[in-house]
Length: 174
Image (tube, rainbow, N blue to C red; front, side, top):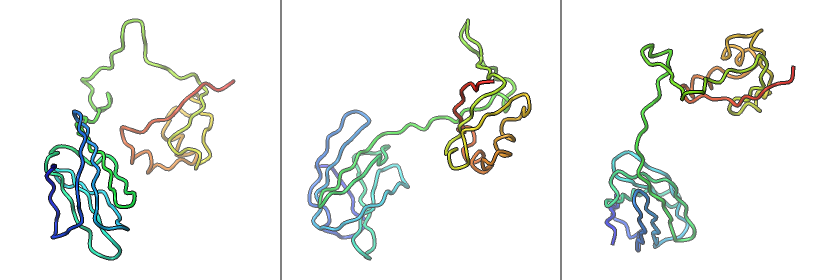
């Protein structure tokens, strides 16, 4: 039996079934009550989930045998709560070459960094909400981010995504 910890005295959990393979685990939890709602919870090294009913306070269920894993997905169907747990390794944030002048971008022999043509279609994340895709003429507007903002794309979105901000590009007819 998988060891679990319930935050308050509760007969909520009837049984737990587990299938685990490496860094993934699938759990099926049989609950003793109907009309239960779930909420994700992650504040420690142990995966946990909040469950509740109506206006009652949520109960926290922690899975003691799965240290270092996080709740990847959760769904409830009747009195069966299904969870997928996974081990996540935090990835280091990439540094931009302009932030680190000692770092040089290297490309395999025979390849070079992609250079856009002078006119490119641009489609930023959720660009359809702001009238994108639009054609960017590099000769008229050298600074790409200021062009995006001038064309109506919110600067807060660019800043919010930081190093992970990306756009789709494709060649525009001249």
